[in-house]
Length: 435
Image (cartoon, rainbow, N blue to C red; front, side, top):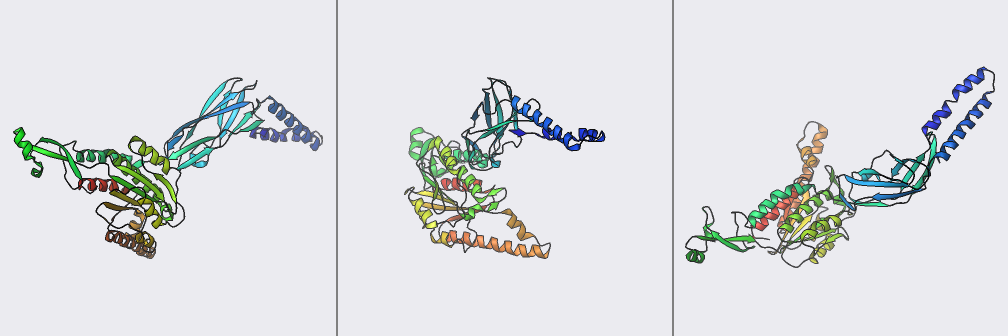
């Protein structure tokens, strides 16, 4: 049973008869007692006349998966098994990060009928979201109180990464089609293979002229080339403590996921094999051996429940796990945040040896706020902050130089710019025949 604010108002209105009868000499306590008894009787009748909140069958409709930040159309249906009309207030017990409405949902369900109400969700956090029960309050005809019951009906939703960087995919796919020979622009390098013959067009590279085909055809024929397929791209995402730092509206890990999704989508369209590994001290997520349309769903599904852990990453174990994914020539993309020499010692000590077959690309997320602080000189406090910011930037550059000396490549950018920069570097390696 529950009472409403209307019952409190009825009890408060008892002040009027108390004052009236007190002026006529009637004892105050007897008037108060009588009024409370009357209010209690009205409440009891109202609760008795309310439909049973237990004689209800509750069902849900919740999508299995949704992207973070996108609206989700969930719903709850009530079937009234009782003999009285159900005037219900429904609360669906989603956690706050699901973005469910805070107010209770109102429903009127006649006897023997079924009604469905929408529960709009707007998830703000990746991972598994769940509602374990639905709470129903059935109000009486007077609105003073009613009956209530909790129904154990579980609803679950897996929230996937937002993949906001997919807006950069069409332009990169256009460049990829140019490399594949679908337009007049052709490239030739160590990692390219013969594609087809076509007539020479002014502006083409004369080194690609096929003189034997020209003699047979009676017109100048040109060999076209395309980047080799079936290469391997290994994406290693650091899920240690540095990935938990907030940059902009998200964390460094969120930016790493965006860069990984864009690169994976591009490499899959290029015909390469993509492997994903999320690691700190143990493997948090792993996708390998999946190609074609199933790759991106598998990657987003693996990324969804993974969050940064407040531990130092075991880089020796991380690079050992990378070597178990493939032994073929590959591009290894490491997404981490190594911006201090002291904390980067373990990373640099375990850094794989450079080779012609394997290219290691290290992507780091930077904070634009630090760059802005380094330029501010308005007050004494700003000068101290600028000095600290400049030291941070210098340390990050020192780590990047160490990565280059070890044979790798370092790319640092803000969360918005990092995904397209890594995708562009991938295309440059394909064009140069290094992948």
